[in-house]
Length: 465
Ligand SMILES: [Fe+2]
Image (cartoon, rainbow, N blue to C red; front, side, top):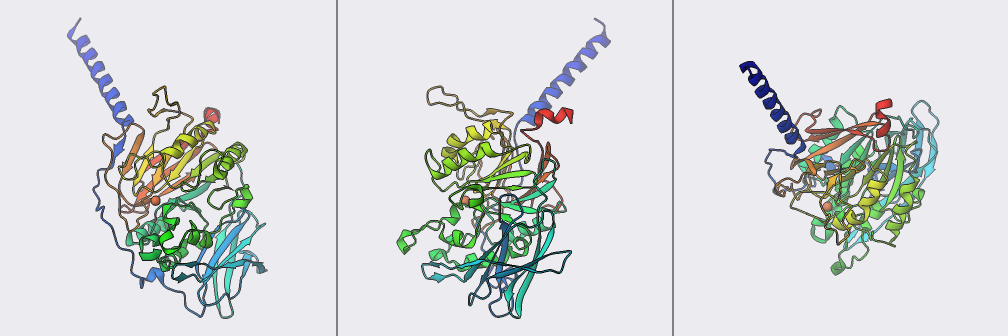
């Protein structure tokens, strides 16, 4: 064998080794190298500009909207009047017309320990045109306020649509940064998917509900103009028998209405909506979910209903992640995972978004559904039918980040980093969507982590399209 031949063989072997090394490296999960201050951070002071009460007697405040039906032609408009009930009407009109229509809502109030809420209005408007900008007006007399929203396109397989993702937001300066970054992201979220833990009012003595009001005023600048799709977290439970508060989710259920009956749910804590090309299933980590419970029964009847030819993208929202490699809250989602994960694989859920863990993490497509007590098969394995699990509990609340991670990083964990931020899930067509995670320290357009997702239902058709 000549010298040149030996050299060629060595070069070939070296190239092969480098190639294998790169593959192995790319298969291993990444952990962001940033070390952030993980300590608690105070909420913004009560006199912060973001909490400003709108001027005028009994002026509507805390205006927010969410989807009001199953298809996307409905909107629920909610607001609070502090002094008296006032008008319960919403006037609305399409942007290209001057003809105002009126819709009438309901008013609810609640007491929580020594706190009495304002007058909480909820008004559902239905049968709107798809893909249309509407203006709306709430209030009465000289004190009215106007906002606008855009209805989604009619559900269809190739309708592009962009969702934002925020979780565990709270009301600190970090929370404000997260919301600002979401608003200024050049990829414009059209609807926000919120994965639970809203105001963190329950961290105050007696769960001081005035911090629910400040939070409502804080998010209004975005939530009055685009729907926020609500998921409950543990900070919404507000169950404190020692002060006589024995009805779980009392403030949340009064303040945030969702169209749960439209998906034949019996509770606002779990429900579904269609929006453009996505089918979104919201479930509650803190409601009974075992066999025979209402939530179990609902989701087992719900998943077979999803028509992936109409809405190819099947998204599940929950608060407590099923896969998380952070030390804090480790394995809290395990009981729900054991019961629900086989369905997520069977029905080819595309992505599961969760919060709770105050950091970011993205999984590989893996499942862990083989275990049956005696077979010992309890290691997550690569599974092409499994969803990607994304934890986005990094909105920026007063409890701070969680920075302690299990080591070594498990193989199923593709990327993890303890930084505040938000996500963008950008659906392009029936086969492709792009997910980007934006940390608050970067410019608005920078994706600190990203992934092209190929739709689980339509993936076999990708090569032929
Ligand atoms: Fe939580």
